[in-house]
Image (cartoon, rainbow, N blue to C red; front, side, top):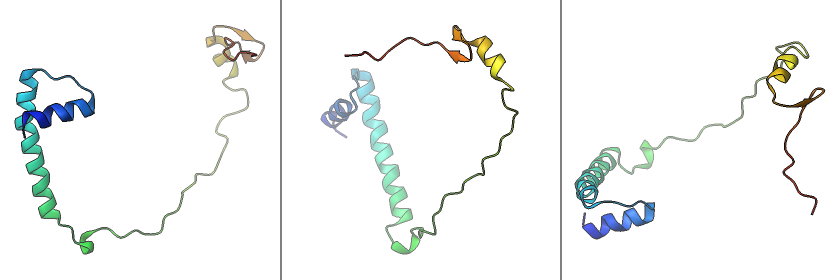
Length: 97
């Protein structure tokens, strides 16, 4: 790869490279591109080797209550910095305007 290519990629990635980093990347990116080309040649572009899509469906887990009501409420409220009864007091962030 040329130095201009490395600078262009760095600009696209929004990273700043030093001269030393550019030189290292020049060699590394060339070997990465070569490796990917080798993998592409091995895997091929044949439609027969591509996985076929099967039936797709969502698997839902049934909702089950695993704890008793209010089992952890007191412990959680004790950890809150400020409460009002059973509610957490938070800073108002939405204006009225």
